[in-house]
Length: 190
Ligand SMILES: C[S@@+](CC[C@H](N)C(=O)[O-])C[C@H]1O[C@@H](n2cnc3c(N)ncnc32)[C@H](O)[C@@H]1O
Image (cartoon, rainbow, N blue to C red; front, side, top):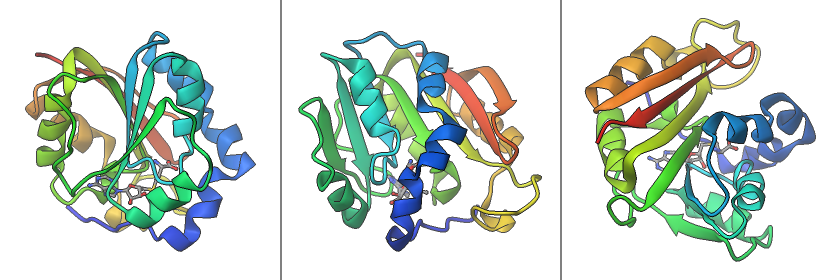
């Protein structure tokens, strides 16, 4: 498994209007089907591409915006986060989140950066309530490389599905979400 970490000097492009138009956070939220008042974990949140729309959708609920990069979290802090965003610096695997605290988790353009994906999935499962959903959106190694991480760093959708199943998640749906990114929605079995 490769693990190229994102370069924070390129953070501005993550929150460009064209990216919002293409990845459609509102559609991602609809796919999750999660009620206002819930707790969403935005793991590998970066400078908050998904964090802000999720915070609006959660209303009285909470978004845990977690990232291992202090630099990315500092960019997020500079964007004046509302009270229902909790910013959390995490380790490569370990997260300071209680067992069963999270209703749903979203991982956008993160999975291919994991150094230890099975350990990350186990840690994620620990924080999710039984039946809690996870939505993973990441780069397709089979797509033409016009942008994004090098093909060698990407993870195939089938491989991610196998990893999820081995980590005791059930896959609810999977699709090619854009021309070069796949999406998997799964839930924790226990
Ligand atoms: C390509 S950026 C994507 C950021 C955001 N999800 C988005 O789509 O705009 C990947 C982010 O994941 C973070 N990251 C990488 N490995 C991580 C890990 N093991 N745990 C938490 N965050 C991680 C990086 O620091 C970076 O901010």
